[in-house]
Image 1 (spheres, helix red, strand yellow):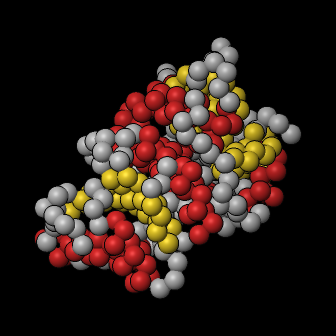
Image 2 (tube, rainbow, N blue to C red):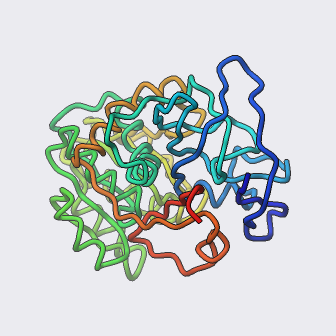
Amino acid sequence: MYAAVVRSFHTTPKYEVFDDPQPSGKNEILADVLAAGLHTRVRSQANGSHYTSTDELPLIPGIDGVGRLPDGQLVYFVAPDTSFGTFAEKTVIDLRRSVPLPEGVDPVLIAAAMNPAMSSWVALQRRIDFQPGHKVLVLGATGNSGQMAVQIAKLLGASKVIGAGRDQERLNSLAALGADTVVSLAGDPEEAAERLGEAASEVDIVIDYLWGKPAELAMLPMLTKRTDRSRALTWIQIGSVAGPTAAVPSVALRSANFQLLGSGQGSVSTAGYVAEFPALIDAIATGKLTVNLASFPLSKVEDVWNAPSNLGQRVVFIPTFR
């Protein structure tokens, strides 16, 4: 088969011939890959920087996708935790980590939208007791996952959604996705934190894709401006675009009902993720959630990988199209 292959964590994946992977467990099956998304998580997998990465090479990147089983059934699946990922014409699917797709659904759309949508969907459905009427701040709302989080918070019943980010053009587009208010994080970081404190002091939940200094600086302004500090504020740490660490002020934990937790691979079981797939797929397939996508043959992986990224698009590779 043809696949995108990583032979060094310091080089781009190369499109080349590779041996077909072989199923080894009773729940595994070899399937054709129809579409697989180039997510931020995939890039960190391919360069060895993700916290789940091992030093095992060669590596076929790709963590999820849409596949066709030998009986013709289309499924969305999350790849097993091996070095054989989804950027290939064929891959091994663990049936326990897959769900059937409705007839007529667009495989490219599902491959594009599921990963960026999954982080906030699972966080709100599995990590906290989210209730309709809660107010939500999306910190890092101008990225693909952040844009999805804005839509998902509204879809699940948030009474107010605030989107915060640096890209003003993309901030301006968030209203059409459901944001009630936007806050620019451009300019002086401390001034941006004060703006965030003014706008988001009454939220119930923060979905944080940034972490680092933006999170560190925003915590106290948001908490000190709350009208009732005993009302819970739950901060869900998902991404770390702005830095892997943030100094949490101890007073933040003592002076307010402030809960800090994470959501990601490990904090939610695989079974927990899979249980959320059908409802999320339905929301995507029926147009309740939208994604800006661009599809390419997998044979173009080197060119696309090295091209300047368009933050407005989710890249999907189609392995069987050359």
